[in-house]
Image (tube, rainbow, N blue to C red):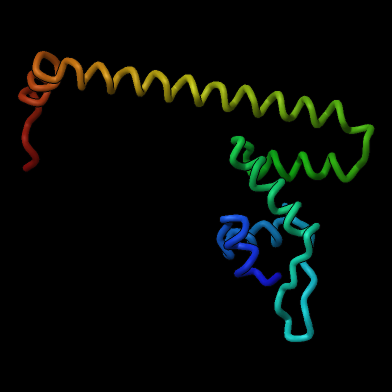
Length: 127
């Protein structure tokens, strides 16, 4: 498959695919005689794995570290689990912050007349 087909199949932009390849989140993709990338099913699996880890909240840096550990072998399984647990904590903190923000917003909506209007009236207009 070419990059356009892989992009469409995985819903990952061609630019992101090129970036992932450049920084090592996916292995180097073979090219044909014209220099066009030719993706194998294995390349698509790596792309899908990397994308899923990113969607799970893992940073690029943490994912690179994880893949480095993966390539070092089975003896790194405990370190990989620890890394995933760290990322879980980071994501949990983000969820809590978002929940707090959602609750504040709901309060403002539910109490718009008694809360927001007085606050807005105390603001000075832009000069």
